[in-house]
Length: 488
Ligand code: NAD
Image (cartoon, rainbow, N blue to C red; front, side, top):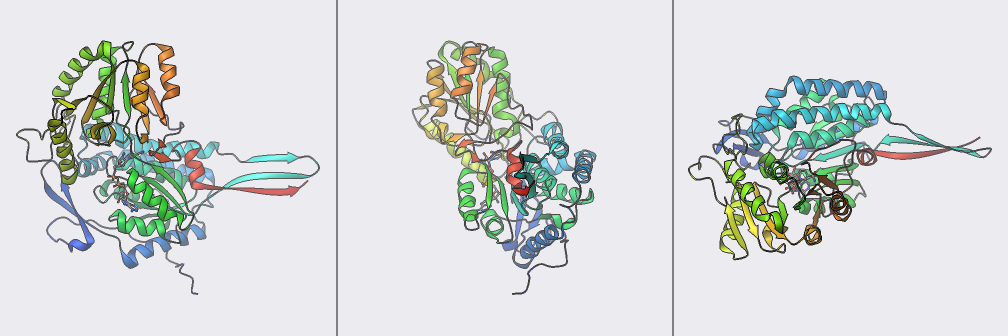
């Protein structure tokens, strides 16, 4: 059989078009700015021969070894250049990011872009510290353990924080010598596409960094099942994660799955209540509430419930909802129409069923129907076993349950299919330590919302995922370990 490998190692990155010369609907995604409902780009889907060429180029470049055979310090230098280029293009990247996600520009510039840059310097540092192992059986043999890149990595990302999430997987996979095929969300591909251009500009060989655009169930699925791809780094919804795991199983490929969440946010009587309110607002409403790690399931201990609820609802009402390009905006519109409609359906449930009391919101923002503006929402829920407390709503939508004590809170917190994160607010050390131990979640935040140390593993228990980003999870996902035994 003729080798499918080609000499060509570079494929051009896809080019989005401006509205006007609309390509056929079957092969392109029209992107709509959620703040105005206006189309702003048509993004071609990568299909057929183009998709095959991308896979073959990535494979050819990997086999050729131009990138993986560079020294660790050469690769680290390139990663640092990528980081510098990201910061030099911060305004451009932030504009694209806000246009396609509607995450407020202040958050894009203040958090998403710097974090994307940091992801590359972080893995440059990881390379500097990467060591092998030896086991010396004196007089018999020496065992040497080394790590090698896996091959062609498929990196599939969601729409809600495209730069932070894609860059974490990209940085790890290329640092460790793999070729990558990045499949951004069909709803938010542009900032990631631009990032991939910068990665090539920094000196990563073109064939090593490929981008495939289009829907997951076609383009993403083809990449996951393709015999020439070796490993899948996926971030997205739990149901999609299950499909990807099944598709990857046909080739027994390694998969890393970062999936959905529905994290409990526990406020005890021993908490500094004002601090808990500040932190909970951030935990729930940052990124328009469209975050896997949102602490959207509030559980407040009875003795402080009235005070907490009164203040938290008052602060929620004051959040500035508006144009995501305005610096003062705290919450932008929901990213796209289907997502907005889904939130409105949950809002109707909250209004219509007796087990909920709407404390604020649960509606489109009055007078703002030029965009998909959903009012920041707080709903009192009488128990934990209902849709609003069990499903990932993925918007500025918090539920509050009043709990008897810490035991009651922990029982409800763990009564969830998800296990991504948990938040606990308390100045009582024994309570904090008990919660830390009991919460079935990959990350527990104590008196702080969403801080990250990139060295610390990030990922989920239960249906929130398999594997971890960070150390050693990213290294395990994107390398194979090899043992070599030599008589001595
Ligand atoms: P999604 O699962 O619908 O899509 C994610 C990506 O998978 C997209 O690029 C999509 O095109 C692709 N995809 C869809 N079906 C596919 C298939 N069959 N094969 C291959 N690829 C496929 O998720 P979304 O709506 O884009 O993002 C929101 C979800 O992502 C939420 O559940 C959120 O919690 C989760 N998320 C998790 C993390 C984390 O770190 N755990 C971070 C951010 C978002």
